[in-house]
Amino acid sequence: MQRFKGRVVLLARAAGAIGRAIGARLGAEGASVIACDSITQADGAAVLLDVTQAESWAALAAQVEATQGHLDALVNCAGVLATGDVEHTRWLIGSAWWTST
Image 1: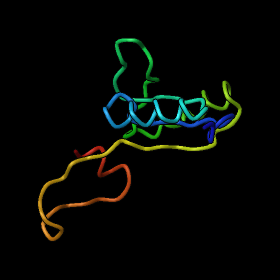
Image 2: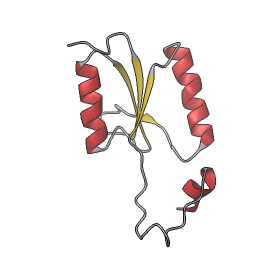
Image 3: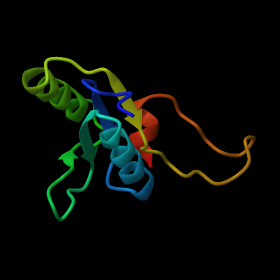
Image 4: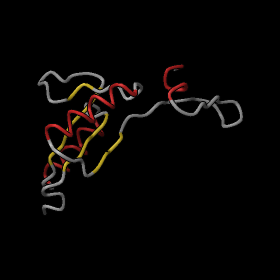
């Protein structure tokens, strides 16, 4: 099946196990996958992206615009593990939280 044929998909945190599986499935479904991560894979497959930095996103957006012309979907596999219960876990909104961890 080619449900994503002709679609451009940006995959953030592509070097992790879940990201690799999602990228493989999207590719099998016909998508042009832009695999991004904060680390580069040994085979150089991942585009460098620091999801905690707005400048990194802006640079990637410009690169995607220049090379692909458009973006159809974003899959964000990046996440943060915070332990504790809701009442005692400090959550900040926006970049302040990302840069504080």
